[in-house]
Image (cartoon, rainbow, N blue to C red; front, side, top):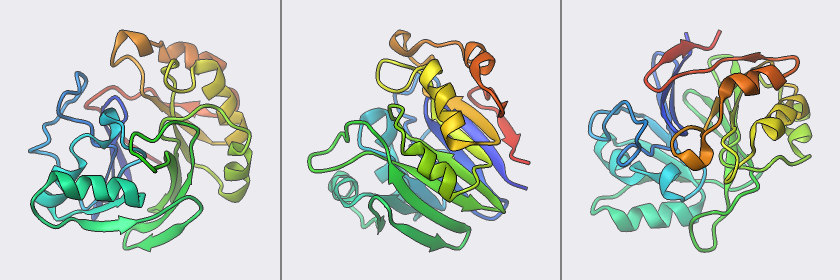
Length: 223
């Protein structure tokens, strides 16, 4: 059974019953957070870019949990500078893929600023427990999402809908079509007024996919 737990804003966990993959662990200072940085568990941590609302507590959790930290090299260097113990670093870059005990991770482009000098923002395609999950990270709509959908049969697309800093609901609905995703989970909205969007309006615009609106603290099974 593959479970998705939403911790608020853009932080979530994928749990296949053996491995816990924590993504963009912004917990400290996150007004939506439903778990403390000190209490979250992880075997792997994936970071899409270095803005504080995504990088968050990645370094501290990685050290405490002895978790592997998967990110671009510039983010790993930044994280290493923040803690006084070694991090299990797993550097990747755009277009690369790597096998892990839980499955495969491919790093794909995102159109967004990086948050760290010399860095680049990314998304991830994650193959786990027989499912293919696409996490867009923070991004604008871009036509090469069609290539991602052509390369991988996307079971679940996890997309930002907050507007202002990322896609809004209209562009995110278009992204679902580009990706040809079977299911979609919106996030990165409602944390602050500037990204206050109604996910039900997003649901109305999505064609051809099931929309799962997951509240902070809620866990759903990715069937």
